[in-house]
Image (cartoon, rainbow, N blue to C red; front, side, top):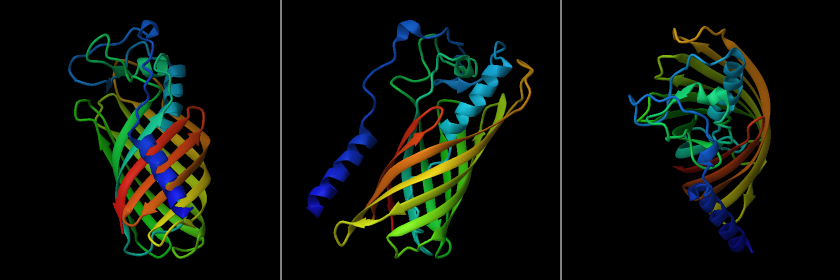
Length: 272
């Protein structure tokens, strides 16, 4: 039975990680795009038509798009343990909204912000256990064909349990900041409370379902003469459910976040 459970979980996680949404957006109902051929991919540039209300909406939704999701359970790694992984976050924003249409430019008039059901952000993460109960992590992503990237960091502290325990409760503090664009500064700070339980499957494999809640505060500041907008500070919350699978040194994970705009995240990594 353990082998069957393990096989099912691995197949589900692998499929979720590699499968892209098949349904493309209906291009007949896209808004008029702002074009700037300076970049090969969609890039941040604020348009003069951007309003304060749209700027505030962008601030709140972009905070959820960029939020640092390490896709880990509540148990600490243990001092000296490490993990390196590839992440992808996909958030179901509506690029018809002025909040997104007036904050991005595109290489041509038919190059939409995304195809499918959400805006995707891949990235790289490294995580290490600095004490028996505390882990730290760093995150970075950069679109080489656009003008932006994100970097971030997090610290997670075990509140209950240890690396040897199956049950765990942890608190996590994180931040993510935008870099590259000339038109805006953007930062999101978050705090998570996560609970999990490890379920051993074999001597070398286990699955750890987890659930949690998050609070966040996002700040945006425009730095362009194209608009004159006040800084926005938008707070909010979200809930998460997910699972990690450890197969010896291989780590797989998937997470769903319920919020104003929902997200699905995947991870493939290696650690010891």
